[in-house]
Image 1: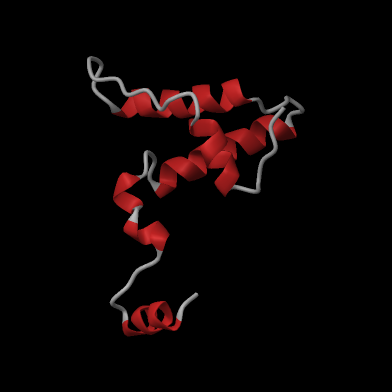
Image 2: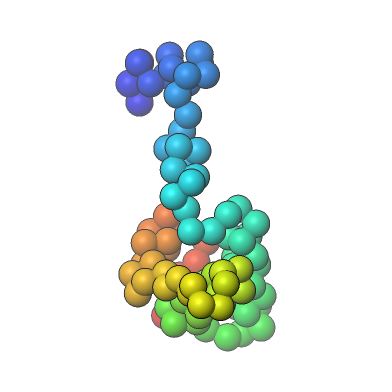
Length: 92
């Protein structure tokens, strides 16, 4: 990390990338925790965690919070991009 970035962070004038991109995220922190907990519960029961299963869980959360005529599709590459950020899960 550069010295300029460190100075700005210490001074409180620069936030982390995660904080800066918070408005761009599909899920809020509580929804991310719900997805994680559900996946861990399924894994504890001995079921394999698959791309399709994780995609369906995420899509169900989005469908529950959006109006019926305004559904949002998270896209087919969402699971891979999220897994590249998380080290908690490995999928089959």
